Length: 254
Length: 82
Image (cartoon, rainbow over all chains, first blue to last red):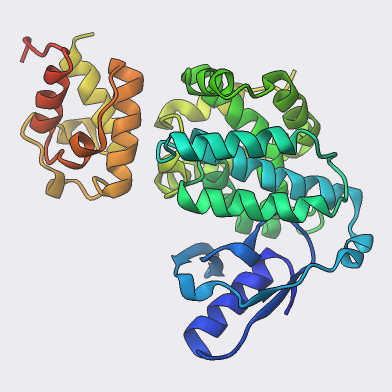
């Protein structure tokens, strides 16, 4: 099958649960999710995200077809980069990542810093690596927000291109700012593994869309109690307390 | 704020329970959200609140608020006000 993360996950689930024995060859149409290398499926069911992990979900073959990227808009390409960055940074800060994982993720983060936030076939490899590493650790609040808000944002603003990658791109900067201000973990780990912190922050600012953030804020507020209960939120690198919503209400990218 | 009060705030906020539900004999099976992910959140919160890092064995062995206090006391955090 040819498609993005959502399509690949549906195909992976269908093959594993309904058509055992069928070979699955995937051709990702965009990088970001890393679904082609992941034993996880994230399915949209009744307006909620349903997550399952099973090695049987892994496709048999992955084919990268760079020409497919020619039709990707610069905006979508940038958001797909944000998806990769959110996997890498949230896994790096995860309470479940040990020193070996942190070291691998730091190497990946330093490599991501060399990639431009535009269409570039190298993002496929980076995306797959980030996905494999986050599967071994966990992701955090950015993904908790993205999983809960996606259905509502796409329904409420159908023409504004809201989807998982855009939500990750828009919320990565404020969430990382939240993590940095509430825990010394980011500063300590960035220093320990010689990560160019100012470079990372410049990327996060480039990915962020302040108008989109303002548009999403009322929905964030409305869904906050569900976000707190999301499994990804609960493995955030910094504890997300109920009153943290105030941080995001008052947050500004300036 | 005493350490008991800090721990109460932490348990209430990690497990999203009503403050009135908190007591020092509270056990894991009485709290729906005290699952494996809750243990991870609790360990992160303990580190931020009390500045001490639970080992994996310590975190997995927590079955009650009393256990949390016992482990914290082993790390030198006093709950003498209990």
